[in-house]
Amino acid sequence: MSNFLAIASATAALNHLLLRALREDMTGEDVDVANERPEELEGGLAKPTVNIFLYQVTPNLAYRNTDLATRDSDGQVVRRPQAALNLHYLVTFFGNEKQWVPQRLLGSVVRTLHAHPVLTSKDIDDALKAAMGGNPEHFFKDSDLTQQVERVKFSPIILNLEELAKLWSVFFQTAYRLSIAYEASIILIEGKETPRAAAPVLDRNVHSTDMPPVIEKLLSQKDLQSEALENQPIVADDILVVAGIRLRGDHTFLRFNSKPIASGKFVEFNDRQIKIKLDAPTLGEELHAGKHGVQVVHQIQFSEKGELHSVLESNLVFFTLRPELGAVEVVG
Image 1 (tube, rainbow, N blue to C red):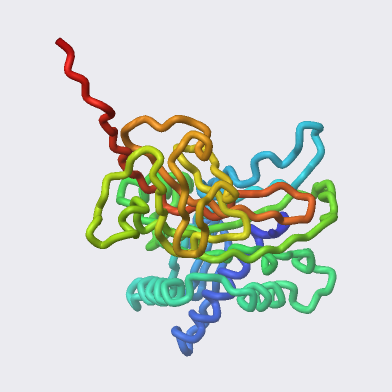
Image 2: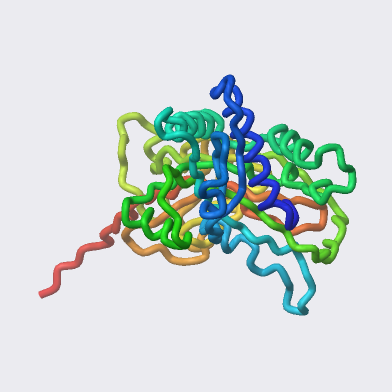
């Protein structure tokens, strides 16, 4: 983040960046960069000048709510508040119109900000050093814009003729000059409050995980016993085979119709298959005919006495439990 000098630092960096480019482009001409209201420069310029005027500051919508809840329920500061701003500059060009000086200045500025739209730390440092002029007590010595996480980026603002006329109308009795508007985003100004220190970490547990398990298909045990018995219907009291990859984990259970079934109730259990009997003692309920969902879940225990946490889940796969007819009795 940066302190209250961020806005002035950004303007100084823009000045320095453009002045350096103008002197390279306008070789042999004494060019200058100013920061005045446009009407204050009328008739008082003897050399080509680019004037940078900060005419508007607006909240940055993307960052506007990122500093919410800076205090806890007791009013203690938990994080420093920050103001996120966009700066709007009017860049005006002064010079001999017969020599197309304003247009040449405009071309140089547009070329520079299009090719170099982001202020680097070096740009800011060079600009502040130039502004300080070797004075160690200059107010810019406390600027920390270079420490801001987000870089300041310049982009042109599209203003139609009506908007441009309204903008120039705020300058009393000032003739219009060739100009262009730019937005600098983003400026983050951080508060002075010292947040409450967070509680120290008493225990660190790092656990690596594999890819999640994948269920490829559900089938009856009868399908595995004989190739002749392929795609057999799944009925009550069958052994359901969950086939897939990475099925075995540190702590594995089946989520059967949203109900967890521990691995201790599996008939067979390995990385490729899980077999479970479809009966009430295993599932804890009598199954009705219809669709039932199955999912493999891996849990991890982060500490010796800690709870198990579900961290990896497979895809959810459904199978149809077929009804069976019992004895048929003819009455009458």
